[in-house]
Image 1 (cartoon, one colour):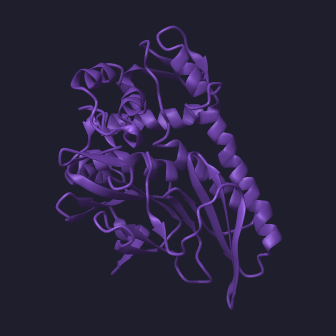
Image 2 (image 1 turned 60 degrees about the vertical axis):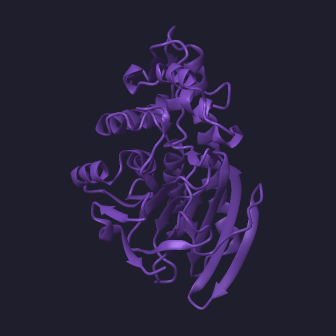
Image 3 (image 1 turned 135 degrees about the horizontal axis):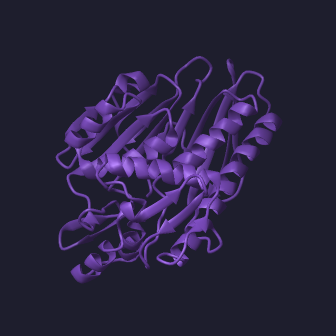
Amino acid sequence: MKKILWIVIPAVLIAGLVVLSCQMQEEGSIHEAQQELMGTIVKIKAHGKGLSRERFDEVSRVAFGEIARLEKEMSEWIPESPISQAARFAGRKSVPVSEEIAAVIDLSLAVSRQTGGAFDISFKPLGRLWRVEKRKEPPREEEIWAALRLVDYRDILLDKGRRTLFLKRPGMAVGLGAIAKGYAVDRAARKMAEGGIRDFIIDAGGDLYFSGNKGGKPWTCGIQDPDRRGEQAIRLKVRTDCAVVTSGDYERYFDFQGRRYHHIIDTRTGYPATGTRSVTVLSRDPAVADAYATSFFILGPAKASEIAGRNPGLAFILIDDRGKVHRGGLVHEFVEEMAP
């Protein structure tokens, strides 16, 4: 599920690994690069005194490679991937999965249990039905109910010991799009740190991870105003290493008979979630932030606050459909809010 949150220095979106800029400043150099991965543009920006272009290219290439590797492993769009194989053999037999896939599915199921199914990686039949980029009107009700019968995280059987995955009913399929990108960002961040680069941002189509700072000054980012394209509703100064992930209804949608139908589907009803325009989730773990951004959008501020209250490492800023801003968890531990 696509998430959009802007960093303060925009980049031209083009495919492949591209050198964007090398800005020499008094306190150090800023280098940027990007690749098209996981269905979006992944950008890496790093700052460092004495950080050479060559060193940045070497380390960022490894980080991009890690994301590319995980995409092949976890994509439901690649027929040979274990995720695709699990759908092919749904209701018949289990399939082997890697340790990384097992870890992502295990986390997904934990979030599903905590959110009462608001987050559910077995949403794939619904997601395939709704594909808002190709629709001009909603699916028929009987189509929605047919897809809903195949959605239930409790029918996903993961054997962590044997590392196998079994989908109980024929026709079931899982999609890791609402969590795998965050997981990949986390792994890419580790590669950057292992390469000796401490101060950087990774932006995977709005799944942001911030590490360190920019020459002693905090990194900053902004939450888009859902009603004003190109404008920020809230600016954030990042206080600590963390992920900042936003889900919104304003990027992928169609309008029909005066109503907006967007891509964030409530798996409990089969229809796009209502009541929320955007939610930004803060966590030290990008995969956790990714999963809860979808969940909190669907659940709304009250239930999101309850969950964030039980998880100290989780916080959010939510804008509802009346434009009211809600906050939950210890937002101030991650970011400082500024006027846009």
